[in-house]
Image 1 (cartoon, rainbow, N blue to C red):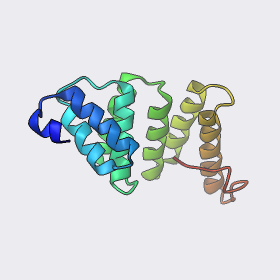
Image 2 (cartoon, helix red, strand yellow):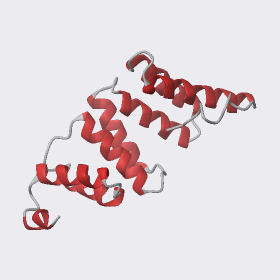
Image 3 (cartoon, rainbow, N blue to C red):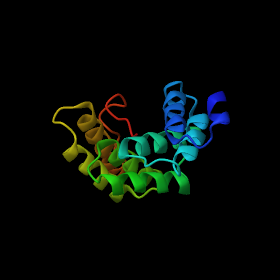
Image 4 (cartoon, one colour):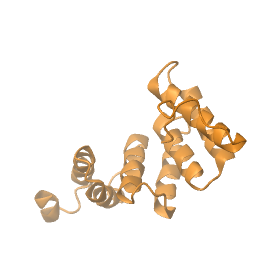
Length: 147
């Protein structure tokens, strides 16, 4: 952080600092570092999804216009990126757009490796929304896990 204060135009440095802060679960600082890196370097889909994740975590898991904008950029970069689809589903769920959330999670499942944790998470999220919409409880709370 001290080094970046002395060299604020080092986009790669801001990106590395953002990743470090995310690993330390210092999401507010990570969000700020990603924001500083963004105009200086081209962020790939992985950096964008990590930024969206850090941004939402920094906002107490609440989606806002900036978080939506970041995840849209990630999906534009790679419409089949599993984490981008998971986050997009989470954002749609947060807005109570359950149909769109299910659509994103179905796309996530299709993009994920068969029998992977991502595939199982997509199934659990879809099952939870369907159960919620039908007024039933999901099978068990351990099987659910809306992102």
